[in-house]
Image 1: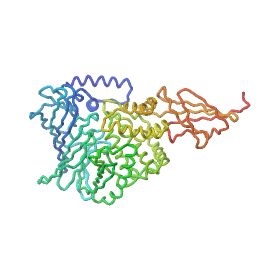
Image 2: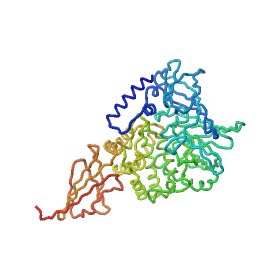
Image 3: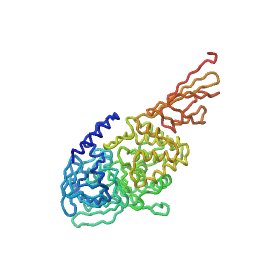
Image 4: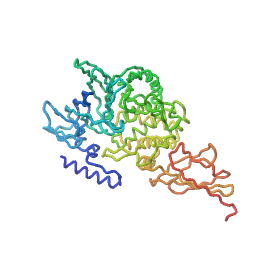
Length: 557
């Protein structure tokens, strides 16, 4: 069984080498990121996760019951749990199953072949000291902190790292359960807040209290969370069409009044996002904003907030406009649509979450303050672009692309809007993506095909250059003035051979027209214009521009 996986891994790595990828991928990468037959043979339908959090020893223990449908006959399946975490019994139909472990993979052996279209469940017991987050939320794990009164304050973040750092599951973004139950036992002086609706709070009369939460929508593993602290709670409601969305806020008590003021931004944000993206996706489960001992994270219906009740990102922004709102509230809540509802199958397409999530910041600005402010906000992101590697990562090896998926991704979507040059169509595309792929896991190609179909134009060259290559395209322009006439020559320099993006240019203040460059030189002639005033609409299009000007004596032959 393990030798079969080694063969698949070698085939994958040889394929990757053909694309000259700079990264060396390991056995752990393939086990974590590849959809082998040991994973595709079953489809998770439901998790029932129960966990006890020991704040004194910084350890956890519990069980996870996984219900699944058999896709293809099998007698061995792979689930995932980090090596440092222990597995107790794995139970199936009243009997204990045998299993093997390899790195983060757990191979479970069944006493009989499970047949296609049948449904089963297993219960996996686990315990251990979970990995601590070194730099949450970017490097995943548990954060064990304390409030000013020395009460424990605990959170978990695991996007990218994997939910299997703390509980056993099928740790791949492509498979979301239809629903889930989370039961969390904590010391009775503390509160747990997790995803979904609180169904029951039970005092166990032994110094522990259990909180039972139910998630009624599909949820991705990395969104599953617990937040443990001595929280203060307040609530509100938001009218979402004919529905009522509950808004629940959990904060450290000393910050209660700050939170009441800061969280006033939630309702106008909801109105903007519903206008442009459609109704809030998880209305049955409500919306929660939970103060966290880290910067923030988009846990589904339980958004973690750590922006210290200031504007911008921890009080800073790349433009003045960025100090007009609380970055963490807006960005992390945008993920309820982009990442939590519409989810990428593979972490290589994490840009679907982060580029659209970042673009949602500009959408909010435009909704609240107008187009010009939004363009100022978007263009302020240029200084943060590295162009170090492609935004789309390598598929099948748990490899996400460049961190440029945030700043550059926002600029790319803004560019596509202005290429489409039809705002009613553009906003229909954005909302339609959010609605068409609601509660789904998708690939980049699904979005590419959808945009091409909605616009009636093939933008494959655009996506290839901006998302799969490192550098933005460069527009080369050469202006030659001879008497009253100016010849403008132009072409694209791009990695994609047939790159042909239209772009706006101007030879007069405020008057822009489209040109349609290709990778071959073209020319137009203009009369009575000042070549010094020739401009490219770089606030609307994220491109490099190279401009040269030459003056020729009209008397020259």
